[in-house]
Image (tube, rainbow, N blue to C red):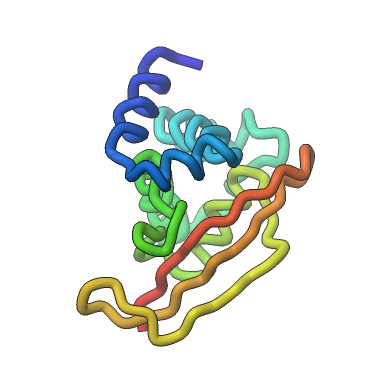
Length: 145
């Protein structure tokens, strides 16, 4: 793990609410943070070549751009609570992002007519499980309607 990654994590962590810091401390978010940091330092094709599951599997430029938006949000520690969810990824993009980190969805709770400021949409609270170590992580994704 590079010093740059650790410094970036500490800087992002300091910007969080105490509730979000507790969530990070008690889940596996740091794992996806450092995976996202590594992804941000290379090209998707090179990352795929080194990844055990050959992620990301997509080569579509639009899908890769959405994954990149998700990477940027992970590096800002988004998605830990309904007040600070992932945004502008859609359902498929969010799924592809989490697949990149070797997580699969195991439970989903959807809140309809959810507002973030003036934006109306759908908020998904999705519990993911890591495909190898079985650690679970619940994250929030907002999809505008």
